[in-house]
Image 1 (cartoon, rainbow, N blue to C red):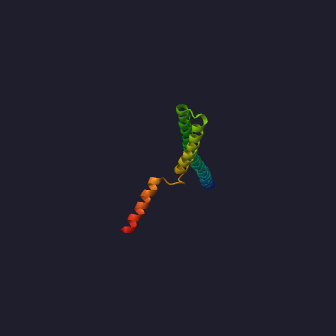
Image 2: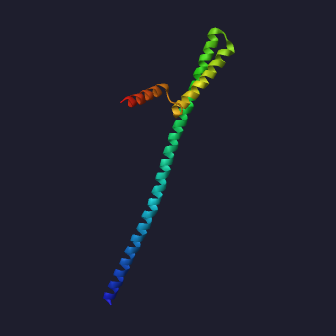
Image 3: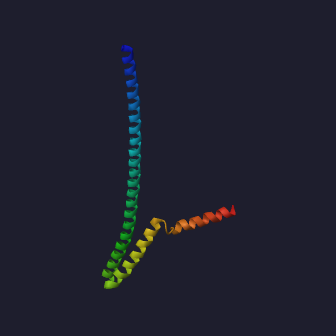
Length: 128
């Protein structure tokens, strides 16, 4: 009888180990899924934070252009006594400068020096 109990215990121990291994494998799969979701969320928050940084950079470039233009216009009006006209003209020029800075920062408009250098490089490649 003791041999039967020993075999029964071995089978129970073997089946419990198999069950534990299966449970461990299931938990590992769940953890891998959770880790994948967390990594995806971390990448998304990283990209959105870089998007916020880009937005802050572009908005500050625009606001700086408008404020500098308004400041120059106000100073011009104070010196020459042309009350609203200097402010209006330089405010519009500041607006244009701000838009141009934003377009350059976003890469829509190429900087003039970079454009000239690129054209020179193309001409040098053709002659070589």
